[in-house]
Length: 120
Image 1 (cartoon, rainbow, N blue to C red):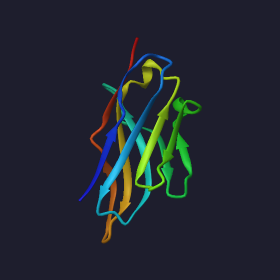
Image 2: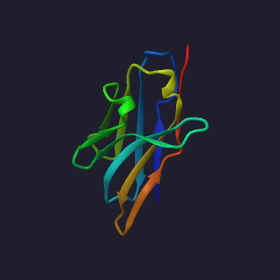
Image 3: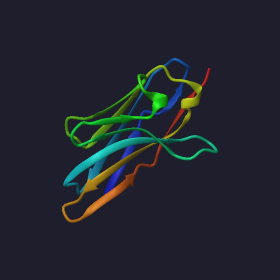
Image 4: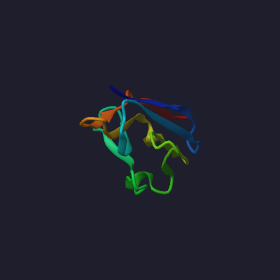
């Protein structure tokens, strides 16, 4: 069984910063890629940022220059540094990973989500 656990969400004022963390645990052979998605009330879930096992990164246009995705040294963790936060960044942020198990794969594994609220 593979599990993703996010942390680091909370309430922050516009212009502030937060750092989200996501840790994968369980019977993992390797992780192909990890990413962060978000879903605001009444909207579809959207990609925020993603990174591959080769450290290539991809960002939504709305967060370029403000957010940075990175992998931990153990490669089973992913971080999202969010700076210059705006009210429109308010959403539940989800971690997603594509995982190779000792036998088979667990593609599209999701965490439970962490709430980010940007408000004065």
